[in-house]
Amino acid sequence: METTAEHDSEMQFGPHHVRFLPPDVFHVCWRGEARVDDVARLFAFSDSIVKTARYFVLADLKEMTSASPQGRKLAAEDPRSLQIGALAMLHANFQTRVVITMMERALRILRRGRSGRIAFFDQEADALAWIDSERRRLDQV
Image 1 (spheres, one colour):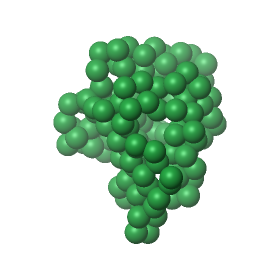
Image 2 (cartoon, helix red, strand yellow; image 1 turned 90 degrees about the vertical axis):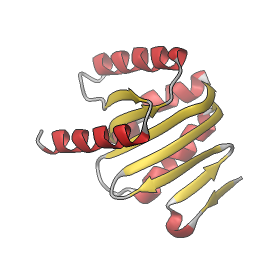
Image 3 (cartoon, helix red, strand yellow; image 1 turned 45 degrees about the vertical axis):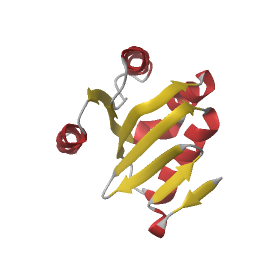
Image 4 (spheres, one colour; image 1 turned 135 degrees about the vertical axis):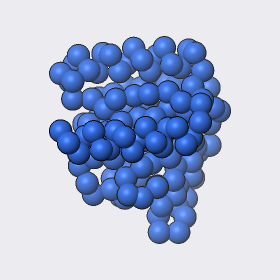
């Protein structure tokens, strides 16, 4: 069941949770498997909040066990993923880092460099600082 909190700035979707951090950051806590319907709900939620051409994602992967092939495919192929300026990944294990890094390299080739940068962090403050620096970098492009 999908529920939203005050001002629609938060959503629980299955075991996962997303919170919007103004002006343009989505903080997603993945728990268990990330399935295709979870990814679709996350895109729909971001569409309902952000009306700009670009936003950022802070993804906490500490409790994520896996991502279904269909979920990975939707995340990579949905045109809305081009709106993601950068992805900061928190607490990703080695296997997840390898898969995400391979996906990022493939997307950079397929999209001719029009893909948001991805970085891995152990501390949320470091991830948010990196997102701020990415925002400034992209504002100058």
